[in-house]
Amino acid sequence: MRSSLLVVLLLAACSSAPAPAPTELVLRNATIYTGDSLQPSATAVAVQDGKIVYVGPDSGVSAFIGEGTEVIDLAGRYVYPGFVDAHAHFTGIGQRELVLNLEGTSTKDAFLAKVEEAVAKAQPGEWVTGRGWIETFWSPPIFPTRHDLDRIAPNNPVILTRADGHALIANSAALKLAGVTGASLAPPGGAVNLDPDGEPTGMLIDAAQGMVRQLVPPPSEAQLERALELASDREVRLGWTQVQDAHGSWAEVARMRKLIGEGRIKVRLIKTISGPGDAADSLIAHGPFAPEFEDHLTIRTVKLVMDGALGSRGAALLTPYSDDPTNIGLITTDTAAVSGMLQRALRAGVQVEIHAIGDRGNRLSLDLFEAAFNAVPAAERKVAEPRWRIEHAQIIEPSDLPRFKTLGLIASMQPSHAIGDLFFVPRRIGLGRTAGAYAWHSMLAMGVPVAGGSDAPVERGEPMIEFYAAVARKSLDGKDGPGWHPEEKVTREQALKMFTIYPAFAAFEEDRAGSIVLGKRGDFTVLDKDIMTIPEAEILKTTNVMTVVGGKVVYKQ
Ligand SMILES: [Zn+2]
Image (tube, rainbow, N blue to C red; front, side, top):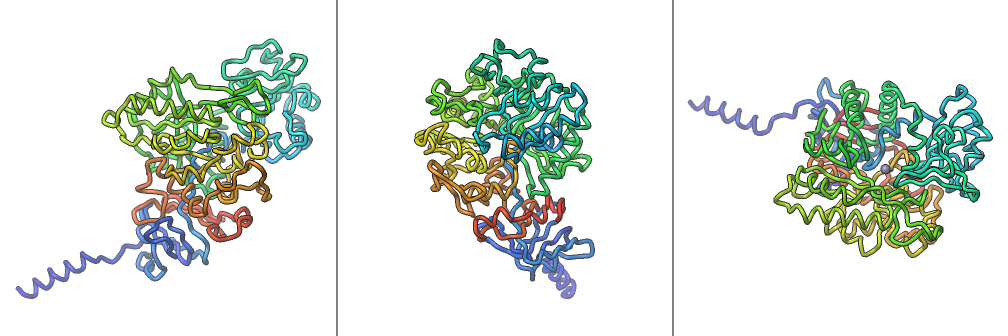
């Protein structure tokens, strides 16, 4: 009797403190920033079934190592919670890899030389398309014209999309095929720019881009799949573990499901469906989808676009552009028509995000969200706290800033936009309106989560550029100027949150992602430098050496 009692007691003792089972992945000898205030640092982490099962000192991790464990000694390198790009265009990133990439052309001549090279390779009459040019840094900083392109491409239709995606330049051959003349009427929300003689300059703004773009033969399904694969490879190489994709269609969702299933997309995706329209309505009718492929794909959000962008003067302002006194920008959404849709989204638990750049675009978006929240009280909502998002939130009339907090919104902001735009924005909107512009610090100080993103391919889409821009608020070569508002820069700790826990919150994932804590997903970004302490300029020289998604090493230098 006594001995059997002893056995029972021993069994009880064993079962209350079982030896940990060996795990799939152990990282050790690292400098780990957990993002968790209770245990801010560690040197080792273990992951099993995609989740963190140990975080602490090296001495405690040995018990998690067995025969099948992949053990990586990081030799002191720096581990952060997996970086998230909270606003990017995933298909666009891939297509930029596939077509003529005009990023980084710093003069008009360099831009034209690249185009000329592509035209030389094309068959006669074949379309030449490209993306990524930006005239801001050219001297003089003026838009290219169709005449510039005609000189190098007399026989091929050419369209080249500005980096921000809100304008394109077409040559005469392309305009002719589309029947665009000085007398053409632009569709609502678009403009055909004319020269003093009343002839098209070749610049088509916002919705007017469709007049020629519709003629370009669509990419094949195989090219689209290749684009997504290239995008995934690029993102994990740079250290992103999740991309929150800021527009989309069901055709893209189907393609993503296929490629994730085949293991060809490794980065996690939060996919939005563009609205208003049938595609968005069908998401609202279905309600949010449960996360698929172990959190690799989540669909719960409708994306709307309220206005254009500042570069092409499409952002909607409360008073005219300072450098174009007849222009107050473009509203691209019929606000009366979408208000019913917003209420249905709220009832169905579907998240809504809206692109708003100008102060009028932002105010109208705030008004629209507020009206929906008032019309559908919390008790009638499937998700009481809807966490709706304003994408960009660039120019805000200061009295509108507190409304982000009172409405419980997420500000989804891209630090690189500020350090690119602020070279021309003070001229475009006047110095006065730069107060309340790109106001990351003010938002955070009010308690508004700021989900950090890159807006790639509008910007380059690199985590170190975004992190640097957030903490330095200076150009990549360390410059700033009047209207840059250095008080809106953020601390390193805040910047880290902007690319980890706040995007997780924005995606309703803060219980399982965004910091290195027991039970959360094993998503890590491993860098060769300590971005929490090194001098600002060093951040730009920091390299991603390893990306881990769900305990799997998806990129290693
Ligand atoms: Zn965008």
